Image 1 (cartoon, rainbow, N blue to C red):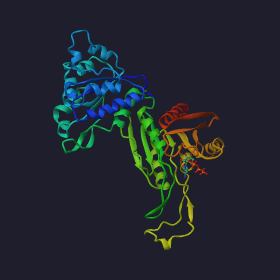
Image 2: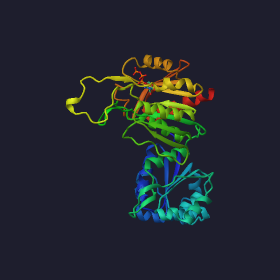
Image 3: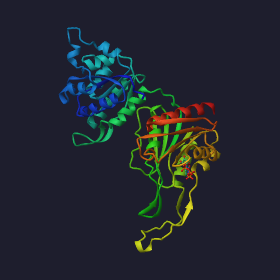
Image 4: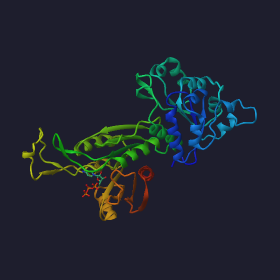
Length: 403
Ligand code: CTP
């Protein structure tokens, strides 16, 4: 939502990662942005401007435009029409041009003529990235205008391994959102829990539930985009936690059992302003955990269980001044059960959602009811979990300001 109608100048420089910036252009267009691509001469050797033109449905600008004599688009006009600039991939040469103020191609001329915020996404060989001139040039860029998303570490096109890789397109997309988004959670530290827990009965068997952690991960993602420092306590899931962006911060603590989750959540909450408890911790655990695998013949026919601690109930009394949010995934009496849990667990806010309608666990969208301590009830229509996350964060911000 944050990129809707945003005018984005996507600067593309010459490197093997150019083919991935076509996907970035597409992701930004899908999010409602108006994307103007400007390619350097070197970039056009990797991917033709036509590819970007087809994706963005507008002319892709190259050096031809800068040196056009018949009243073509000027770099000043391009600069004026950009709400934000993303340079991805940014090569050593373009970084040097910008650091030195050289306006000798369409991209650097347009960028130097703009006061818009810039997200720089360098990608190059490790030795180039770590070289003295590149690192020095980065320090010359105005930190008020430039955010630098550091390259990822891993396999490089050259066959070497190290920092220099173009980050995942989803991570660049989130960093663009962060640059475009109001930083209304800057200065906030938010603890979020996500995913199921696993309660082992022996080394190869456990009790768990179908939670994937998607809702909590989207909350963590949205909070970081809005400038918060996030502590994500994550149960076992196949989903990746959000990466750390050029703004905000993401600390991930992986846990297995409900007891582990309690310990990590307590530690995270101690330094936080709010806790959003989106995880689905197991309420019970097998009373006996066997050290070695039980063979079929030895498996008990009934499983003796004992209660796990209720994390919210345990932590609430010690953290009275903080904003505490719970979830309730229900199949019957959604609002009534939600209201009961809100009171029982002493929460400020609770999102109650039905999980027998194809939404809920693992789904991309969510719907339900946002219940507040003061009795307010907001019906949340079906929408992406990211959008639901932002609605919850809006409320957390409001409640936090009142506390
Ligand atoms: N929760 C918790 N500790 C637990 C179990 C749940 O803190 N051991 C939290 C969940 O993260 C959620 C809220 O409590 O935010 C409600 O969870 P839910 O499973 O719906 O409720 P329960 O208290 O477990 O009650 P029931 O299983 O009877 O519905």
